[in-house]
Length: 318
Image (tube, rainbow, N blue to C red; front, side, top):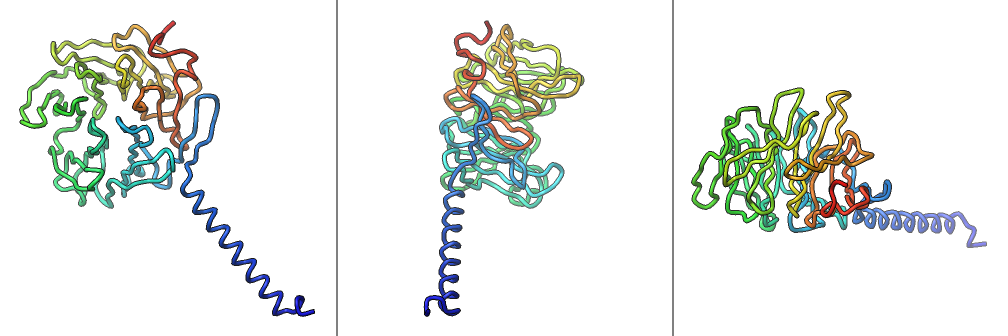
């Protein structure tokens, strides 16, 4: 009879509630350490949501297959947040944040040890505005360039960088800071969209006037420029780590839908990746076999060979 007394029942219910709460807390702890991987179809996987403060751009680490650099903000609003997403655990490591001003771009140095941030005016956490370098290990930051330099990309060996200002493209020695103009632009260059080939000999960038924009490859040594795309609006090219393929966003003049295309640096082979719409910010994995990108609802990665059914480095076009 004592087991069924109100006091005994209350004690049992209290213990049950405590155990249930403990289980829930344990599950939350376990789930918070897991990533949100979900296979969408063969070769395409959902990585993570864009978050309450939505991710606007991503860049895969050049040296670590498990790290993606993400920049998150609501368009036209503060705050802004830059973090590292661990693809194994789903954990986020803060790199920079601001409650005022703006982050225009974030990218990596070629060794994967530092993050480059372009901070806008009135970004109190990064003054003066311009390009800053943040050391991931020590969390220390260093001001590199003023805001007038709107584009920067590090050379693969980390010794040179390219910047753009007023339509001119500059090659800058990182150590000596010596500069030279390597291209004077005739058409409008799409800011923030330079990509360096792995051998350090070429740059690809988009330029043009609406409703068309094409990709151009600049030979750094000879200063010659070659157009490699035509038709549509081509933007945000990214050279593959293996060097012989460029991925880029292509928007149709009719309907405005954006998808991904692959193209050889000479422009002779071009192929679209099927089944993708309204995506942006493509970025290569360090081994050049996968692409990550942003969709309306989250971040995805794509196994290129599996989706296209071919070895893209052996036969891009067939």
